[in-house]
Amino acid sequence: MVRCPACGAQNRVPQDKLDRGLAPKCGRCKTALPVPVEPRIVTDASFAEDVERSPLPVLLDAWAPWCGPCRLVAPAIEALATEWAGRVRVAKLNVDENPVTAGRFQLRSIPTLLALRNGHEIDRLIGAHPKIEIVRWLERTLG
Image (cartoon, rainbow, N blue to C red; front, top):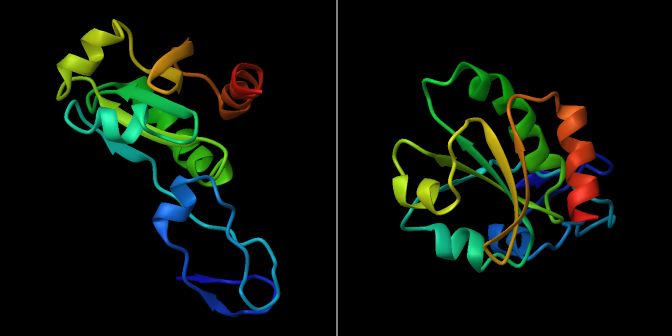
């Protein structure tokens, strides 16, 4: 349930509609709704469903819990999940727990951000970067 910032009405926003790239609007006043969206946790087992079959391009954050730079980038990734909802699906892959996918994309340095379309890599950004640089990279990469 999301409260409309304009009229205060409570609106039900199904996750499957967000996943299809639909931007939610208030049922009463038709104002765009701000929907907090969490990055998806992707595993070796869920990669095909969450990334390859995604109707949206995917920003995949390859990280590990022990990685300091990964923790620095995490707030920016979480903010982008909400800000780019409906345009990009944001996901996180723990490389320690998912070696098959990490090996598939030859992830040797973390954090690494992958821009993917239909499960295929379009581009990557390696290292900890400020949010503004990540946004510029996404805009160049995904158009």
